[in-house]
Structure formats: structure tokens, C-alpha cells
Length: 339
Image (cartoon, rainbow, N blue to C red):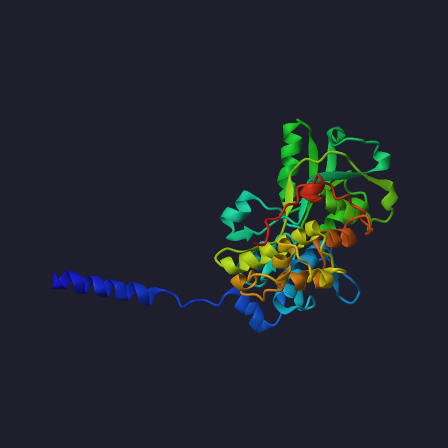
């Protein structure tokens, strides 16, 4: 009996000794560093685009600025790392970036095989096609035998194959490693058509030599829920990134804007009081201050404001809200409440 007990103690000692020391959380690392490191697109109008001074703006950029606001109360405390489609997941897995906000489609394989977790959807999209008007094609179903420019390392490649296979149509893929190469090849006439997410088509069309000569075909051939991703294994960080997006949606639904958020601090509405931190300790449970959502709205705005200035009617892209409208207005953007 003594030998059995001794053996059990020895085994327990070895097991405990073999356990790694508790690693610092992502939030601890970000706070210690003093800046959030965000992986994003090298240049996609409306989503992530640097100006001539390297200052980024866009819908995905606002995600990162909102996270920085929640943590530091400063939307400028973000370092943006431009990533191509091929390298984006490796950069997140390796810890090179804290969060990936790069118009990335949430899929089962990406979440189950790559060690990543998608936190929410900040843009519901779908894949489409762009062609020159002079091609005389009004439907993607009429692209039989066409050459199509497509970017490697994206869900776009598989969707393209599936669409033509399902409809028994032949095509010739012309693949490129990054988005700029793909768009330039299409613009130079190397391909009959260009395919990517519909929002990307609108964004890339404005950069073509003669944008008015190109049309986006009506077919949407896939579901592309785009959103930020984090590494698995840090639930606190997942919560922070997820609820940053939810807070921006809840703020829009409640009518809390960048302009009126200070006045809303005096609101008697229980939901607004919890959202802005004047009641409860909902930030504290995530390792943040209780006014975390107030900071986001004050510095970045609500989801509708971000959408409008970056990709909506107030932007060069002029995209309709569509599915990205609030659920109360016919869309599918819906966030759980802060309570």
C-alpha cells in the first residue's frame, strides 16, 4: 500500500512539474507592449487602405481601432501589419499579430484546422464577377470558356471551381499570389473576368484605369461571412474582440452615436446604462474598465457610422447595407445584449 501511495505521489509530482508555466494572456501582452498589433489587408478600399503617410482607414481598420479604444482609450495605439492572403493565418498562429481583421471568410476548416476562432461577422458578403461592358455578358452563366483572374490562397478559388462545375461550364483560371497582381492582370486585359467578394469587386473597380467600362454581374455564388479572428486558447481575448463588435452593433440599435454618447451617459434606459458602464461591471469581467464600450463609441462610433463612412453611401464604394443592416431594419446584423 505504501509503495502504491509513493508511486502515485511520484507520478503526480512528475505531472505537475511537466506542466508549463502560465503564459501571459494576450491582453497582458498588448498592455505591456502599449500597442495592439493588427493583421490587415495591404490595401483594399473601404476595408483597409493606407494613405500616402501610412495612415490606415476602413471597416476592418475600425475593428482594430475599436479594440485599442476599449483597452487604451486611444484608437491610434494600433500597429497595422499588411498581410497577403497566403501569410495571414501563419502571422496570427505565430503571434506576429494579436488579431486578424482582414476581410477573411469564416469557414469550418479554418476554425477547426488552423487553431483559430472567428469572433463575429463585421461584413456579410458573397462572391461575384466583374467583366468589361464590351464583353456583352449580363450573367455569370454566360462565361462559358472565359478566362478568369482569381487570387491564390483564398476561398474564392474553390468557390469558382464549384460554380463552374455545378453549372457544367468550362473556364480557364488565371491565378496570382496577391490581390494587386490579380486586379492589374484583369485591368490589362489578361482575363475576361475577375472574381472575388462582391465588396472587393466594388473596392477594386474604383482603382481601375476606366472604372465606368466595367460592370459587376448580378450572381452571388457563395456565402462569405467576413470577420476578425484570434488564436484559440485565450478566452478572455476572444471575449474582448467579440464584444467590441457586439458593442458597436448594440450602440447603433440603441441610437448611441459618436456625437451623442456623452449625453447618453445620463440616460435612464437600463440597456444603455449597462452598455456605457454607468451601471454594472461588465468591462471588469473581461479585464477592461467598465466604460470600455463608451470608449469605443466615443473614439470610433457605432457599427452604422463605421459602415457608412467606409463602404456605405457616404463612401466612394457606395455599397447598400443589404444583409448588413440591423435585424430591426430587415438585415441580419444582430448582437447579444450587454447584461
